[in-house]
Length: 226
Image (cartoon, rainbow, N blue to C red; front, side):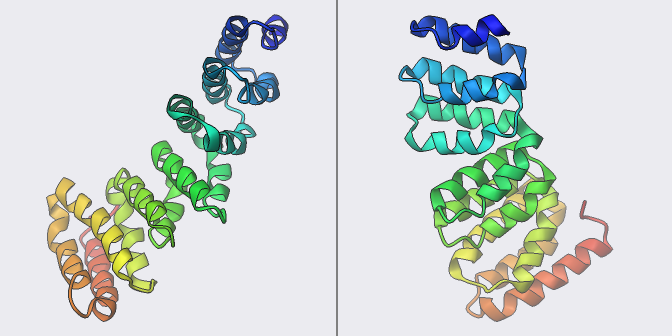
């Protein structure tokens, strides 16, 4: 461990890259600070190894730094950073949930994207909340993330439709989620299709909430929700 940490600051890029790779394999949180520093290394391959290693080490302190590093990352490094966030998994959830409330739409988009990739139930409220985000790219990322949760997404989406201010944009994102569930589980069709019909009707603002409430009650009564 001591040798690898010393080598991670070597003048030769190839040595730094190998040392950081080894630190990732060792999965020791002691290396977190050094690996975070390596995210700013002038050599792209070293930065990639640093991101990969942070994902393996599993220290939640790396999450905000990884998110920030995405801003200036090229496609390859950015892809590795995103993979690291997803690999961090459950330990990354609290920091990602906080980032999901950021004033920066870019930060919210990255956080919601990672939360969808991790697939942890604690992310459901944030993903549902993202459907109403003022930034359309964030809202669509929330919708895409919710689809991965299958039937678990149905109840919170219907609850959102019961209380949220209906807008044409909210109709699009929630329709995408509900329609995806119908496609994957045809038993849901008679319950959710009437809701989507109301959502695309002329009086969608008035008709959607009661339709969603009715569908939710019927789904619960018939035991079709997880």
